[in-house]
Image 1 (cartoon, helix red, strand yellow):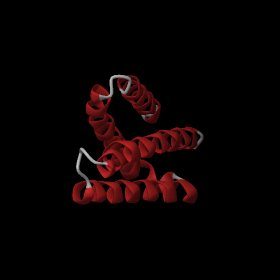
Image 2 (image 1 turned 180 degrees about the horizontal axis):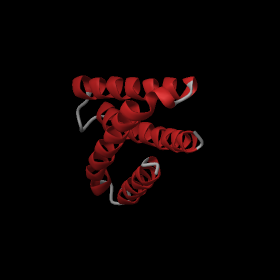
Image 3 (image 1 turned 180 degrees about the vertical axis):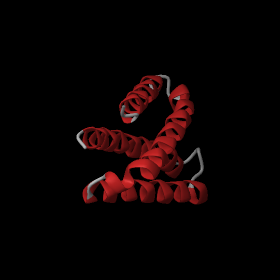
Image 4 (image 1 turned 90 degrees about the vertical axis):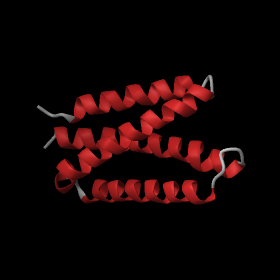
Length: 116
């Protein structure tokens, strides 16, 4: 049994809920925290359990994902104020872009692992 299929479904559900809650803006911002935690836990699980089984391209993509998270978190902590444009970019816009890319990457990795 492959545990990535339900993890992919959970990530998709949390992502879609976040997007829907952004219709209210405030609740979308709050639920983005849940999305971030879900995706970081998922990325940690994938990295620890499947990294060596992945092809070189997906290994690089995982490294790029972790790098993007680290850079964005650093920029968000040290340059952002919630009430200015950098706050909106580094606290909300960039994390949603990273979340979208990670969801696609998780889908690719799930397909790859299922075919091993």
